[in-house]
Amino acid sequence: MIGPIQIVLILIVTFIAAIDQFNFLESLYQPIVMGPVVGAILGDVKTGLAVGGAYQLMSIGSMPVGGAQPPNVVVGGIMATVFAVVSGLDVNAALGAAIPFALLGQYGVTLTFTFMSGLMAKADAEAAAANPKGIEKLNYFAMILLGSLFAVATLIGVLSISNPAVSEFIGSLQGNWIMGGLSAAGGMMRYVGFAVLMRIMLADDMWGIYFAGFALAAILGSAGLGGPALVLVAFVGIAIAIYDYNMNVKIKNMGGTGGASDGI
Image (cartoon, rainbow, N blue to C red; front, side):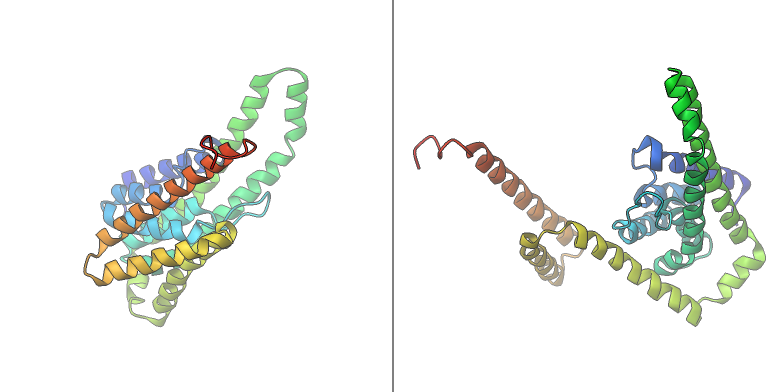
């Protein structure tokens, strides 16, 4: 069960994260941050971190473009953590179960953008009148509106899970084919999200480094190093990135000079 104080704290965190997503821009809204925070509120930071990291991978390649909004990472990440901690779902099943609430968050963003588009004439009028306070009020109104919509979407989910009948129903599904399907979908989505990011960002000349890193991680992992193997691979990647950066800077600085100072 979720206590009243915990519900209030989760709603406050949701409200702040909603504003941060489009205004503060401090990345507080990212699932990797929100997961441990919500997990701490519910008394399970470890599960919150696991869910937050998995949801981050799932959403890392999803970028909003104007009015086209992907399932919202704020509401989705928070609800995935709540599902995992309160209902005892595994990480993959929690990711799948949180998608409907992420869609509610998406609708909240679309509704806010649509409503605020009608107030842009008011903002233009305030700008023409050299009244920055009027523009500030419009911005604050948009923040409060979006934060409130996100908080309502989260409240609906939290109250639903807090209902003993709902909790009992979810518990009865453990090991059921429904939970198996949610786990399969949630496990797949994190890889799809990362693949989308790679499709956008990975240059053709970087594929060799990617596969080399994958092979190195597999080799070190098979040697029994476990988690530290990923840290070692990360340091190798950092070394390659620093070397590549320094070489590119050197080549750029040499451009137009006819070569290095020693004549070679």
